[in-house]
Image (cartoon, rainbow, N blue to C red; front, side, top):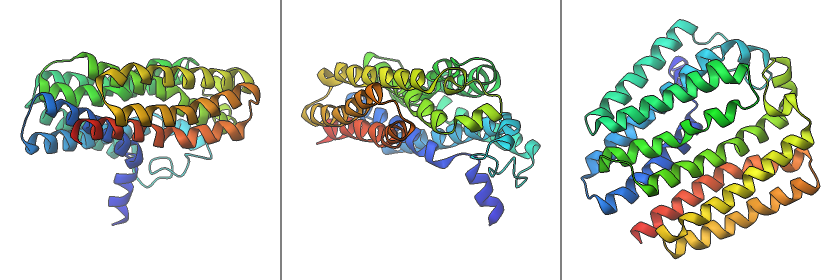
Length: 283
């Protein structure tokens, strides 16, 4: 039973849950335009649970040397010795393979987006740029938007304006989430020699970049108002005010505590704004 728990943990289930939720939000919006049976939604959900979980396990395998040096991550299944690296690699590739095959049978374009997400997250971000450039998360952010494109293309068989905008919203969100976390644990990243933005520049500069992306996120969210209704309008403005307020506070008082508040609110923000999209389409 402990081993099963370890293999679930290495997939980072909380991350999987949020990514799959955003994808299902896109799927539920798409179904209103391209009606399909509930079995398609079940296949999409299962494929993305496997695909995103497998990608996370693969990134844990790639980052095992970094994770072992950081207080926040040294107790993860691979660096703590609960899962052997080779077994974690095989496990991750099996999950990715099954997830990709499942969506391929819905539409090949969905499988392509799945693989692009894996490549950007595991290779571009974790294997290459995370170790070499402070722009790492900018280059790795598109991976977060890929589940949305997987879900939409699996149903529609093509990519359209709305899912692209939904994916870009996640791309804007990603640096806020990651930099806020990296700022709070900057000593860990510095010890592991990972050139995250808070390590290579001052905390004040990092915080201002976080604030800039947060304000850009709020502004960008308003572009989607015309594609949804009153619920999205109310929710996006209400939670946008919270993000904007925290961002302005950061601009004038760049402290780690306020940055951490922004980090803690960033996950509910993404959940709420995508929930608003679902409710607008189905209520």
